[in-house]
Image 1: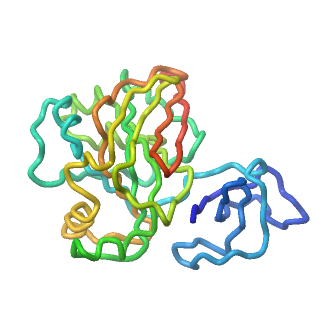
Image 2: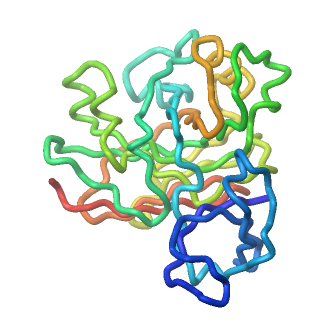
Length: 265
């Protein structure tokens, strides 16, 4: 199932949807079956109404109430291009939940940075409270998967020597377009395309640390809550996104996430 979060572009009296954000199941024809409440808490329960995708604006499919946990240097080629060795353990850091935006929303270039980079990533959406999850039970805590762009102010990252400011700006965590509850990460391709030019290309199987290892490691450090998101790392090919550029993250079998970049500052 593919779960979307959306806002109707116009109030439809016949559907009685109003203008508040809603959740739904989207099918291959682009028809959205509206759900009752947030499926993370209310379950996947259609309310009998449906709306065409053309009549809505897709939002980030999950709005983390708590945190976005990120895995750094999880592809060997990316660790090399960043000038470091392959890590012996997962490298984790946090992005604030206020950095999350949805598909087609604008990545806002902060005035204090002169270089804003793309980082294509697979994102895990957590479905239950969990701590110290054994590797063999990792799938018990996953609600589904979505796409992410771990936007980074690269110059600030180098200046600071740590990553909070560089990765924490508002709009620096595009997610979407949906959560796929049936997707199984394997040998699928992951790409980033900037203004139509391929910049990043790898296989999910190229990850140094796989999904079971990531879940096990992160939950040894911190408790995860429903709606928390884990970004699983980016392959080589990261680079700057010019003003007014368009960036598309794609994962085979999962979908595409496209965002534009604002002007500088």
